[in-house]
Amino acid sequence: MSLQIESQSEQKQLQKVVEEKKDLAVWEEALIQEFIYAIAHLNHVEQHLIESDSNVGTPIFGDIIDSFREQRKIVGQVMFVIEKLEAMKSGNVNIRSSWESIWCALKHSTTALIHVDECIEKLLKKLKDSNNVELMEYIKTLLRVRGNLLRGIMNMLQRSKVAANILTEASMRCREDLCLEEVEKH
Image 1: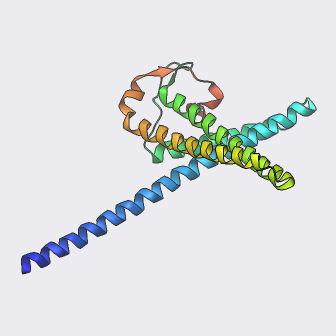
Image 2 (image 1 turned 180 degrees about the vertical axis):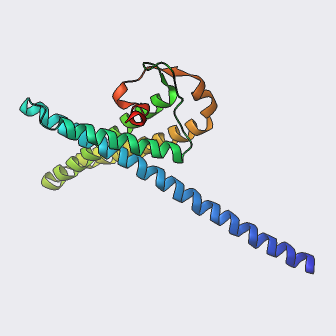
Image 3 (image 1 turned 90 degrees about the horizontal axis):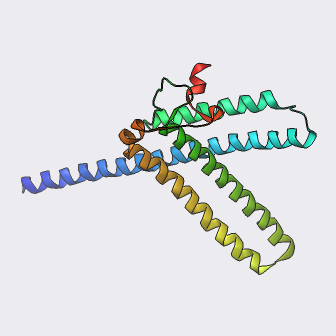
């Protein structure tokens, strides 16, 4: 009898640990998603300010764009540290690690995610104004695309963590303004 009670007690304790781990995993995934959205929105601010400068033909917002870019890179650094994805240090300034390529892929994929969101918003407004049933199908398609993009971003980050040792051995060129190492110099 006492053996069974111990077993039940152990089962409850094990179940509690499993629940805590599940809650932690959900929290960690939510945190990574927040980082993804923060990076995407900061990048989107940069794009809109560049678009504004392009429209007037004068770099009115150049310093502000640089400031947002630096903040985006800092958010990325924090995310990589939190996720234990640190960029490999390289002696050659023109060579960047595969981690920087992951960073660039993250930047572009999160920007695409925000653009898909904006397409959905615009189609929803158009649907409201026209009641065109065909638009609803396009919206549903874009909602699936959005879900797939987010899953792809999460999978990319997860796979990067798993393959960390392989990624640190490889290196590639990357645009200087997008690389994490540049923030560390300031």
